[in-house]
Length: 66
Image 1 (cartoon, rainbow, N blue to C red):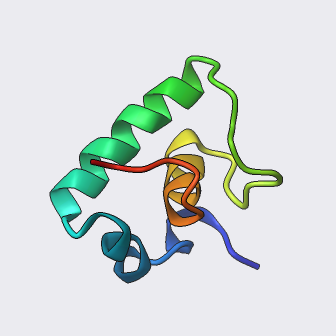
Image 2 (cartoon, one colour):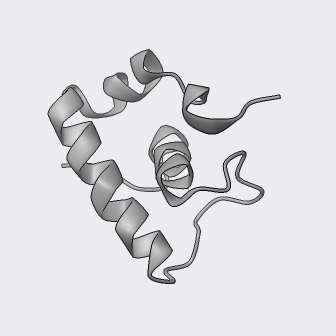
């Protein structure tokens, strides 16, 4: 089973943003939105934590980091 910060892998995520810095900032902003009550954009996330959910959304192209 996929869990916690191990899914999706950092190598897979960096390909979505081409920058670890953009990835970290974008995921933090999105995680804050989720923790404040924004709708989760994926069905059945593997993670229960907002940061994990944000990373899954990025990986599944539900949000775009510019």
